[in-house]
Amino acid sequence: DAKTTQPDSMESTEGETVHLPCSHATISGNEYIYWYRQVPLQGPEYVTHGLQQNTTNSMAFLAIASDRKSSTLILPHVSLRDAAVYHCILRGSGGSNYKLTFGKGTLLTVTP
Amino acid sequence: NAGVIQTPRHKVTGKGQEATLWCEPISGHSAVFWYRQTIVQGLEFLTYFRNQAPIDDSGMPKERFSAQMPNQSHSTLKIQSTQPQDSAVYLCASSLGDRNTGQLYFGEGSKLTVL
Image 1 (cartoon, rainbow over the protein chains, first blue to last red):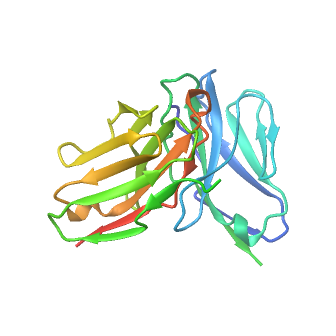
Image 2: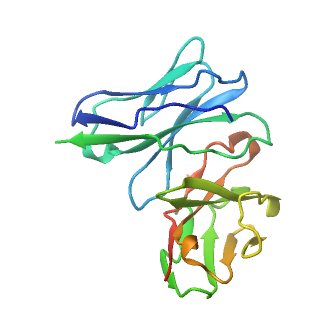
């Protein structure tokens, strides 16, 4: 799997919109971009994923650059519950690409 | 939907003892994964089952670790002769299948402490 680069940490305040960047300059054409988040004492939680088009769900908006070399997870109106480590992961399509390789992610701190 | 259920949540063993961890995947999910998480190594892939069949155990430490999935409703991870370096949180995850394998649902984990 190609490698991703994320900032170690980011800080925000409740109610703000947070932009979490991820760089993946060597992404392959068939690789999806996945985002997971993890809070202490719990397993990782799926947030969203995309291939080429921007995607949105109840948790976040994923903006993917036109050249696919970077993406940004956008969290609108963050609350204290959004404080977590956010992982940006690449995964190829096809049945043989089942492993998710987690890096250190970005620790998002949210203050009241 | 109860999610992925892992038991026990915490287990303390003495060095050399055996530890067995259980996982109940989400009903209808055909893919089951085991990961291990430590502060130093982060999240590491251990093994993967698809439709109960072992597909990949490349992440499993040799000799002392084994995983089984005797039926579609549970999987076990067994560690024989536990060592202090086995102390970690062991996470089980399930997914619908190959096309959606990237969307994993994780349990809360089993924290193993080897004294």
